Length: 317
Image (cartoon, rainbow, N blue to C red; front, side, top):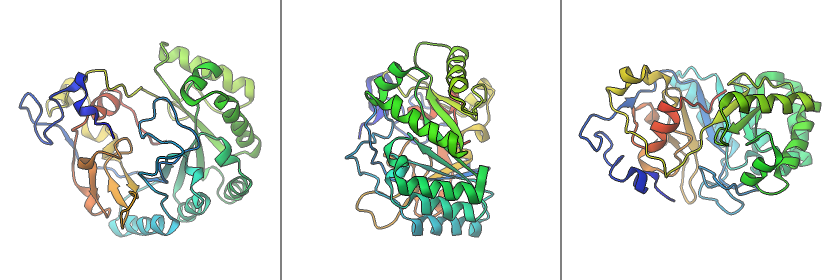
């Protein structure tokens, strides 16, 4: 897997876990308010996007399917550690490729957690067994469950340029079904199409209104617009002095409130990662248990700077 820290734009940076290229103390983030525990359901996906941060594809099984038993083991640990988790998130790959997706969601919902499932709303979600399972979960748990649909742009052409010809139409069919079924739906788009945020949100608002989607395009929780992860763009390293300079706090960064569980191909056990965006960076692997994962996270990657600190993004709802 490619290492963005060694790309030409950031050569020499992000090499030492604790010290920047200029010899300053690197900023770190403690787990101060654990709110979301993510499970990566596996890196396999029904499509291969032009710019996928996790390199998901029909053939990438670097992260294999996680199981309901493994999810339950970590849900038990939440109680044992006393983490104030409110939300369980499922991401991929495409989560509905995992045959145990419905059972895993049910395990979390039945314990009272909110559940967020990220999906492209295409064929894997639209299989009969998955639709029947979602209808049953909706009946039992209502708005406790949310599906966040990846819709890169409100225009067919720009979305399809990222995800392949015909992808927009298939995703819209899935969203129509979610609307008609009454399943709470939000959207994740991309913010790199040479338009300002206001224009982007206005375009999505028009699309949502014309299709009867009950999604507020002005709400950052209902329409998340993620910045592009461009390895060719130089980003600064975040030092301890940056917090005051930027007017931000460590507790505002995503790794202060979340962790992600993955199962690597060939591994005996799942492991816990500091960040949903860095599944292949070994320095962000914290151990096998939630207890292991309570350590501070050094912001030693370009994504830490561009996406989380400077961009202020969050994968949670």
